[in-house]
Amino acid sequence: MKRYVILISGRGSNMESLLDAGLPGVCAAVISNRPDAAGLASAASRGIATVAIDHRGFAARSEFDAALAAEIERHAPALVLLAGFMRILGDDFVRRFEGRLLNIHPSLLPLFPGIKTHAQALAAGVRLHGCSVHFVTPALDGGPIIAQAAVPVQADDDVASLGRRVLAEEHLLYPRVARWFLEGRLHLVAGRAHLTGEIAVSGALHAPQTDQMRG
Ligand code: GRF
Image 1 (cartoon, rainbow, N blue to C red):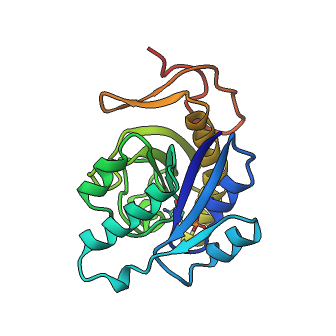
Image 2: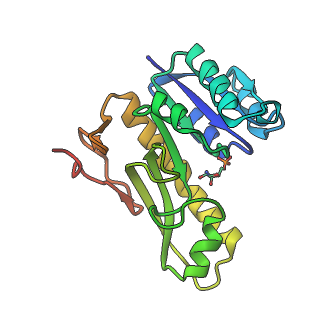
């Protein structure tokens, strides 16, 4: 079974959805840059090894990145999943893990990169909002998109209500994508996400729903 590592900074609800999905792999560790991340206790309660590497203990971003990379490599993962990991990773780190480094972002990329995505969506007046899972490249929230789920924006939505509905879709989308990767069906090929095999159609507005990405 392939090994994977999850990186978090806080609550860890996406981490929980990954750990509870019965993925065809072994979670070797959950690593946080914040020792007080609530997700660490949640991972430990599931019997997963947890590690905290406090970014505040490093003088330079590159030193933190190097320590994080060394810790990840110790677990020899086939896949590294950023799940609410709130540190920007440097180019060297990203290149080292490119092709096996995924992120979930709470917007329909390339709209609304960065933070406060639900507020951005409401301010822009979009009628559809959602989440994206993408390969991580040095461009912030700019790597090749693998899959997205959309939710309608309702007239009375605020940041909290919209965020809740997007988060519910995140919890479905990220395990789907992680499963594809662990099954050996998802690769980064020439700067594009390449997916093979059948994809079960779901009721929600998830794309892709068929094997339209093949070829
Ligand atoms: C999620 O919305 C994720 O997409 C974003 O940060 C949030 C983390 O939430 N990157 P959680 O820690 O997974 O509950």
